[in-house]
Amino acid sequence: MSRDAGGSGDPPDDTHTVTVAHPEGKTRLSVPHGAVLRDALFAADLTPHSRAGRRLNCGGRGLCATCGVRVEDAPVPDHWHDDLAARFGYPRLSCQIRVTDDMRVEVPEKLVWGGRETGGSQK
Image (cartoon, rainbow, N blue to C red; front, top):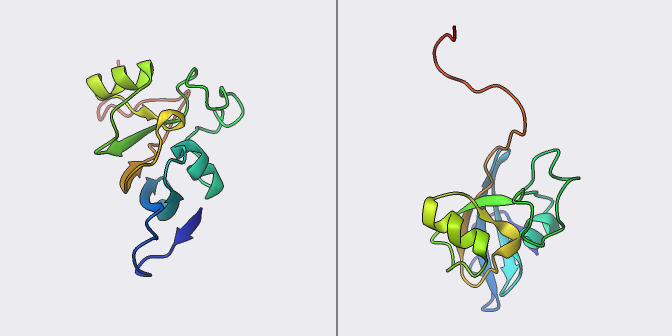
């Protein structure tokens, strides 16, 4: 997988462009057809996990839900968690998505513990 700085033309037919919005910015990846999205993110030094999730995850087995991403025009889910996530609008598991077309992905900022901004004072 390679990062594309942009504007270098279309990827070959056996790869797809995955545009990833993440807390540090936006990155375009050239990903082989059929690659697992989680693996493609790791290969590009991006992670779908929170800081704790980097160490405490299931290794891509679809069990822990720490690799959630939002995918525009996501492929049809074939994993029970992704089916529920797609149905109710939750992030999809990057370990359960195969790249079969160009896609836009957002890696949301993940907080395991912490405060929630409420916009007002709490009593």
